[in-house]
Image (cartoon, rainbow, N blue to C red):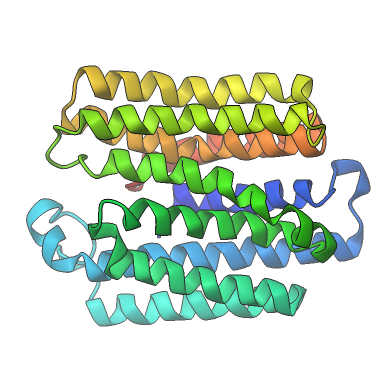
Length: 286
């Protein structure tokens, strides 16, 4: 289930809630319950998606990653499939408890994740687009605690779509290397995210001064790792760049919180990063 990645999905929900106007000072019992439902829902959706990823990659993993649970025989494909479906159902049901719209977002996310796992990931263009869309939907799942805000701010999903596209592009060479063009394009997409955040600040949607330290952290983590992967274009460094990209989703989510809500909530989200880093030492990220 990629425990380290699940933490980043929870950060999506908190970031989405911050876009919807939530701050640490305005927590109310009803809001807290809904946020808990959505955090548990995203664990189910994301967990189900990565389990299905291993189910569909079984034959490939027998060659490239035989140590994984399925090819090593620790878990059967049938058990894994059942687990993935149960996780999806849990995610959809919990999201539906918040609102029908939240439930619909969960359903579309589950479908998108499965489409990515089975077909899109093998396509140079559609792979990054579908995976990015799933992450954008996950952010909107957090925003859905306030439907009026969701109906006006849904275009914010373009930011994680672009960044996840950058990560997915980079990951396409993590086994064999030789993907300098993809890494260079990924760095360009990271810069586009920064430019779009700056544009939101110019138009008064977010507080740029509060945002600067968090953007610096997020961009710096990715830029350093991708430059290294570009210079030494080998699987080891490409995988490190992909891993850093996934984990840096937490600082990116802190950026949303800092810009739309408060630096206090941003710091609270950023506190999830050490947890994710710790888990990444013991469980696969990519």
